[in-house]
Length: 267
Image (cartoon, rainbow, N blue to C red):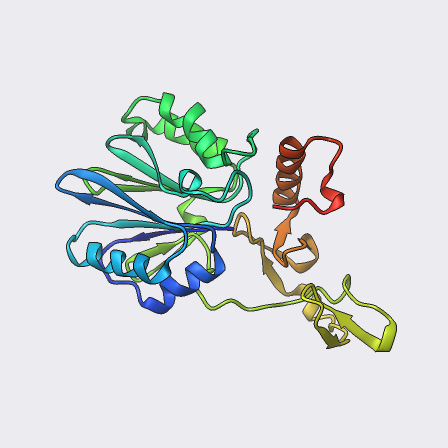
């Protein structure tokens, strides 16, 4: 789903950083202000190096630091598609969610939205309530975090994430990963076993009526749903109906109509 983090002053525990990386392993990015200029750091492979760089930045500034850990849903897994992105020289942003926008195999939805929408707006558009509201409507249930060269931040759909002390998280993937299986869909009758996506077998259990009402979270937009409203994808992630449809459309655009979502081409 990705996770966007706005870290105001406190140093994040290494456990939080490692969990965010493990749960969102397709690229780390960080934006911070240094002498009135926005700097961006990105790393695709080295978590220890990334955390050490974060510590160095955090200890040298009292201004907010933006962090982003990516899960790829469109575009390549490369530095160019790794958040954050410059809107202009005085403004950067990162994104958690999926945007209903046409993408290519090369460029993800966030870069595309930045290029065709955000970069064409006035440089101070966040100070204009009407434009800010239009952008908020355009991104659906996604969450955007902006940071400017003065250290001021703005979070669109801030209420869909949550604050822990002085740090805002767009979802809870900074916590240790937990695994669950949809017992209603993925089981075989042979030897009365459930077969998970990793081909490990589990004894079959039947959920009680109370368990049918357990809340779940979409791994792409980060919003909470009833368990029956979520679909499990081939990689084990959970998607709500809206995100499932957007993922399906993105894959169809990238690979053509002759190779479909149902043939297993999932991001």
